[in-house]
Image (cartoon, rainbow over all chains, first blue to last red; front, side, top):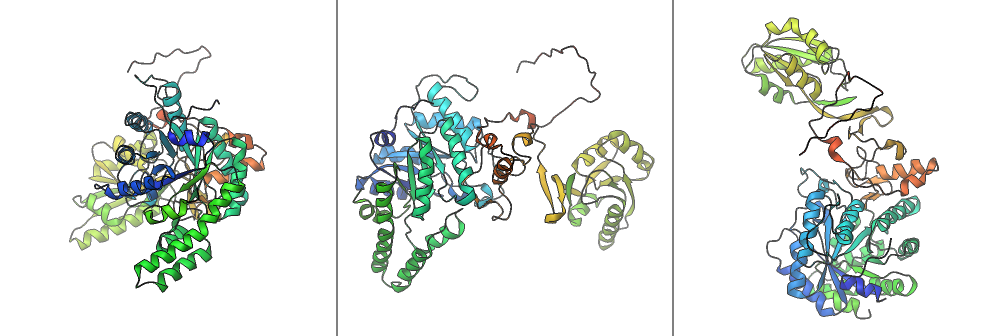
Length: 314
Length: 232
């Protein structure tokens, strides 16, 4: 299909050929969004982050919605948001209503996700919805944006609605699991995705293979990276996030940094930051230099102090 | 077959504790594990024990019915006993319980089971496994015989999702297979990956909406029938 116009700053910068960086904000069980706003401000200060993703109930937890914080960071901080929406909790009627509502609020990027299953979250008894899957959700948003209709072709009054559509991919699929992942991404591209933001990668060789495979689709890919603020986060990631394995050396280095400096917070921060910078800066440079990735999706949630140093060369 | 799990005896007792005479009906239909005459008898003994601890005498009789979900079979089997009992306890799945309440409508029929799913008995895995969700729109012909509705926690039509790791599903702690990896393997094996690549548009869930009615003993004709769809 013909390429959709670049409506968002993110999409414009990608099309302009810049190596873009996106950040990530995670509203939790928050009525007070000041931490999210603060994090967005720190992203803005770097001058390097073009847009910030706002998560929608990650790990299947019942968290504050993603629409309102997506709006607030644009309005209050002036950084564009990538509004994450999962199909876990809403049927096609609610998804339609929310997408049009988000568009009214000026949201220009939507990341279409299936979402972590509610059975993994903190309200396990919930009935999961999954009326549409994430690919079908792309069809819905495409119809809203390109045709100004709902899924049934019924017209939306007003418009046009201008939004760019992102989708996810899993760079940790390897071996025999790589092909189904790549073919699945193909469906998403066919239906109307504009860009990809991947799940986090730690293995550069695998990431390069994955990016190479995706080149067949001619769609910009932002490779997901997750700087590790504490050993605890690294351990959790390694244990509980599907398909992610944190390299053993990195895990043990973080553990040691925490242990060696347990009485000195400042020294501990410096040691952990150093480990992250030594791992991720060369990683990002290598990706930028040797692959066709359009940028990096940097999921340094609540790790504001690293932003400046991590991104200074980008 | 319909896979059922027996309710806790305390829950069954709480439902029937006000009655003195109950008829317990097993079902010889497709319920698995078996819920027939022996299981009905065992439940009777358990309830009698519960009644005694509560200082009460409970009279019960156990029978079994060929298929409780068939109104003619259920009615003819149960009719001779109805005068003598105050309530029925059914060991059938929910279909049987509803039907018994219809055919023996002067008394109440209580469920002794929770109906779990339509499943297969997979002895290799020592499990009853949900193979069909009776969704009303069978995809098995294009998914290599693996169901993405019953087999996928997210009911994906265009999987796999990011929650699959080395062919296992995040739901249930990576113990159960990812249906979409199985679909991929099956279609690849039969050289039909084109079917895997196809985008499947949103499903029409009207076929899975309750309550559902399908006429039986419909008159067939080779003349086209024109039906008028009622306006909403």
